[in-house]
Length: 305
Ligand code: DON
Image (cartoon, rainbow, N blue to C red; front, side, top):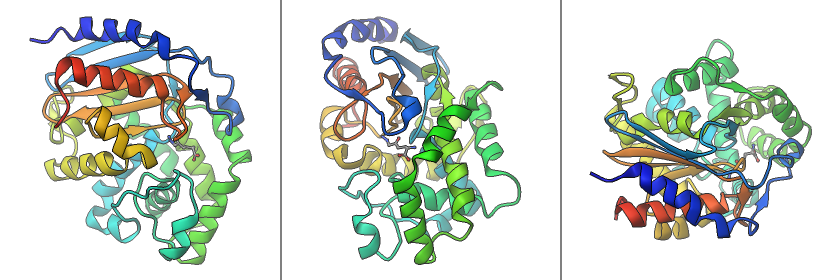
């Protein structure tokens, strides 16, 4: 039996030389003040056991990791219809790139790049009720806590600077792939990105993805086995944007990142892993977090390859 606690504590030490090489996101002004040298990591096994190290109990802005859970919700409500609004191919472009969107007539390459996430949130907003509460309550359910919430300052800060995302939404609206009002969509999207969770909560929330849909903590299938398989595939091919190939090469796990410095990864059948370190690489993924996950799969032989 692997000593996960020992491995996590070892990684927390081993990554120290990698601090200072990345850069905390500052294009959302409220994120620029997050201390750079935070490091937390958590493992939640499919049996339900939790192992944590460092700042794993401190909440951070989950940002694009919210796209993973919004996709889960969309697949539960709309099934395969989701794939008429977004593709499931890697884009090879930056997460907020506009280039392909015109060539591909407003259908984003996948649900994890910003235009794809905007299309998914717009789809969810076609349901009755407030999508903000829907995603907040879903995250509370998944993480098994009723205190997980969105940070109003971060959401307002992003909303005031969301010029590129607004342009993406407007372009898609022009192609007929955004159905609702762009203003309301931007507010909901910024709200979901400003959700805050800690590493332990995030690993818990991703447990159904590692368990073929089943969560030992909920003692229930939260999503179907087929949904877990499909979302895992999209994480593997699209979850780390235009560095998804080198991430697969180094870490070898399906994962989803956010510019708050969080990454959540899954080892199918075994565990969900989360890491938080705010300094980002050039692709907008956690620099130290990627090193930590690479060390983890090397030390525990848990890469899927
Ligand atoms: O839309 C944005 O730009 C941010 N709210 C989220 C981007 C993000 O997290 C990309 N991930 N690495």
